[in-house]
Length: 271
Image 1 (cartoon, rainbow, N blue to C red):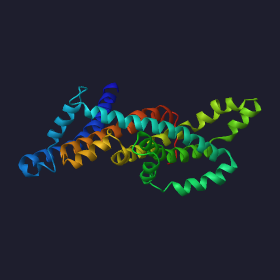
Image 2: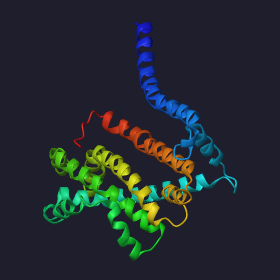
Image 3: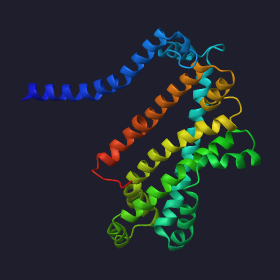
Image 4: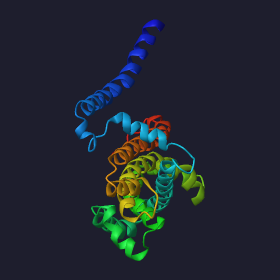
């Protein structure tokens, strides 16, 4: 049984790793071969190996070749600050909608009104009010991430077992104890799901906003500047970095937290 179980786990692991490698590797191999066969198209479609060499050469902390580190650092910092603020703001608004009658009457219609507006559409307004500044890009991240957090927190409160609050009241729990012992654990899986979804929206909005509102650093700014210089390798390198970081942030970092809470507790969160 142990031998069979080991074979089964090995086969499952090979499927999880091997299939994505093949799915990604075959198109890249074909791209590499076409670049070698048709070198005239290497300007618009540089070979993946040359893009990889560019990324590797930029992964340095020295003053000459370390620009990529600065672009990644600025983008991640803006994302982190914006999502942290969105988590605080979104949790408060979601709790007001979930727990108060006036919140449902006033805030829910406003939420329905502004939610369809793309976060990037606010960029011209913030550029006029604030200018080209980190605050502009952080506000775009805040707006992009907030709506998913608000909706999920409000849904978590609606689906929470209210009998737990009645039991806490009957045992003389204070408002702070109910908040920390009942409400937060009850809505935490929904909050984590909201943060995960909101971070994905925020990451995409941030890159676009950096093309318009970043001063001198950021992955979006790097791609926009490279397009003005017709530097196709840098553009593709930026796209690769954006895709990789987006996957790591949403599926690895936040995914681990989600697996330790929502999946571990067996809670199905409606999306």
